[in-house]
Amino acid sequence: MTSTSSPATPVPAAAATPLLRHRGFRSLYVAGAVSGLGSQVSQVALPLLAVTALGAGPGEVGLLSALGTLTVLLLGLPAGVWVDRSRRRSLMILADVARAAVLLSVPVAWWMGGLGMGQLYAVAVLMGAGTMVFDLAAVSVLPGLVGRDRLMAANSLLVGTQAGMDVTGKSLGGVLVQAVGAPVALLLDALSHLWSAAWLRHVPEPAPPDRPATAEGVGRQIAEGVGFLLGNTVLVALCVMGAMANLAFPLLSVLLPVLLVRQLGYPEWVLGAYLAAGGLGTLAGSATAHLFGRRLGAGRTTLLLSLATAPPAFVIPFLDRGPWLWAAAGAWFVLTFRTGVNNVLLVSVRQRIIPDGMLGRANATIRLVLIGAVGLGGLLAGVLGEVWGARASLWAGAVIMALSWLPVVLSPLRRQR
Image (cartoon, rainbow, N blue to C red; front, side, top):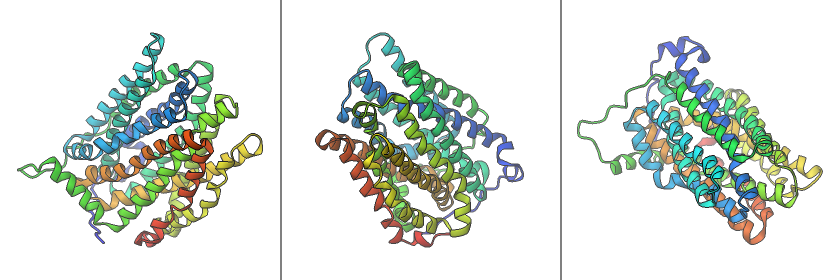
C-alpha cells in the first residue's frame, strides 16, 4: 500500500490562533456558509420549478438531477490539473461569480415568459461545473491555510456549518417556493454566491505549487493523479464505498418531489422539511465525528456506522401518508448522520495522505468517482421511476446503501486510525 504523505505545512499564525479568529479561515468559513445556504434553497427550488411550473415527469426530474453531477465525468480530471496549476482563491471567486450569473438567467427567462426545460438542463450543467471547480479549490487550499494537524477540527466546523445550512436552506427553500415562487428563490441563491465571492477576497492567496521547468502535459499530470489514487488501497476503499453511498442517495431522494408533492399531495414545505431532516443528521454527525475518530479511529468508525445504518435504509421505501412519513424522515436522518461523520473523518484522511502538489489532481479523481455516482444515481432514478414508479427507485437505493460496508471490511481501512 502506498502511504505517501507530505509533512505538515507550517502555518504559525493558524496554529497559534483559534480557527474562527484566523482571518483567512474565517473568511473561507463564512463564504462557504453563505453560498451553501443559497445552494440548498436551489436544490429544492429547481426541481419544484420543473415539476409545478413546467410539468416535468420522473424522467425529466431525474435527468435534471443527473446533469449537474455528470459534468464531472467530462471536466473533473482536467479541472484537477487546473487547480494544481492555478491560484486557488482566484478560481473560487471566479466560480462564485459564474454561478451567480447562471442562476440569474432563470428568473429573467421566467419573467420574460421564455423559460423551458432546456434552459434548466443548461443551468444544471453549468452549476455543476462551477461547483466542481469551487469545491476542488476549497479542499486543496485548506491544508495550507490551517496546517495538516488541524484538518479534523477545520473540517468539523466546515461540514457542521454546511449541514446547518442544509437544514435551514432546504426548509427555507420549501417555504420560499410556496410563498414567493421558485424564480425568486433562485435569485436569492445567485446573490448568495456574489456575497461568497466578496468574503473570499480575504482568504490568503497561496502561490500555485511549484512545477518543473519543463511543464508536463495535462494528460501526464492527470495520469499522475489517477496513479497515486490507484496505488493507495485506503483511498481506493474510500472511493468505492463513497460511490455506493452516492449512487444510493439520489435513488432515495431525486423522485421525492414526484412522490410527495404530486402523488401523495403534500404541500411543498413538507418536501423541504423532509430533506431538512437530512441536514440535521449531517449536522449531528459532523459535530460528533471527532469523538468517534478519537475513540475508534476513522476506519473502524466508518465500518461500524455502515453496518448500523443498513437497516434504516429499508424504511424509506415505505414512505406514505401518516406515520410512515415520520418513519422515513427518521431513517433519512440516520443515513445522513453517517454521511456527516464520514465527511469529517474521511476527508481529513484524504487530505493527510495526499501531498500538497497532488491535492487538486487526486481530489479531482476521487470527485470524478463520487460525483459521477451521484449523476448515475439521478439517471437511474429517472429510468426506474418511468418504468416501475418512484418507489422502485427508493428500493434500489435502499439495497445499495445497505451493502456499502463491503469495501471497508475488505480493505485496510477498517483498521485505519
